[in-house]
Length: 255
Image (tube, rainbow, N blue to C red; front, side, top):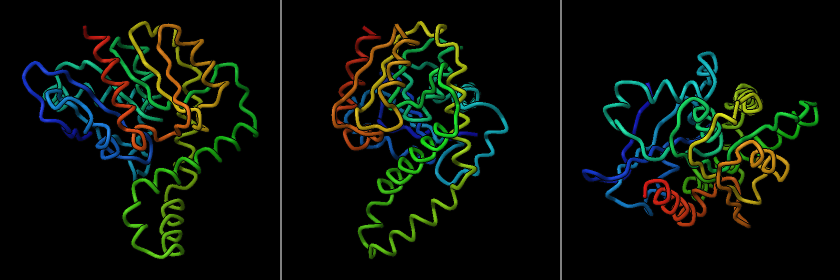
């Protein structure tokens, strides 16, 4: 069962926004962005089975999109948010949202999504590059989450802490991500006709120019924004800008 965390007070009639975190992350990563959203909205961050510390057993129960769809359909979720105005995902959470959009129509914002073009040959080179990207993203995620703790210890102690967590994530975590990445190539994105916004940074190694171009081609109805100088965790490092895009998009799709 997933856990929901309401990040804004909300008010009757306020918009409902659902936030879906990436792999080896958690709901708290949305706090910086939520501070820039209307407090009258009901902003909920989900804690997904692929959160930090997961054993990734969720892989045995279906793809990320199927898992997300099942969680949103639980009685707990329906009580917390009977109606959703905007579904927002980051990283693998975006890929889960993208998959769900092939089954349901709902306004969505995809931040730094993983995407595998259908025509991409899965070679050892692609595998090795994906592993390098995964390691880089995990390091960035850990540094963001543990920044306060790392600032209070010696560099060698901090590196030992990070190495221990990397070892815990290990090949199982990487294969969960890689399988989810490959799964996006099989999605019928032609079925996605609802409003969508893709927000990425030009310094995000997980979304290079070729993958971005392929996603633009496969999602012709979506809006695309690429922010110069932004990386994979733009919703944390540049929360105010990401929130501004979210506010403008939500206003556009609900006006």
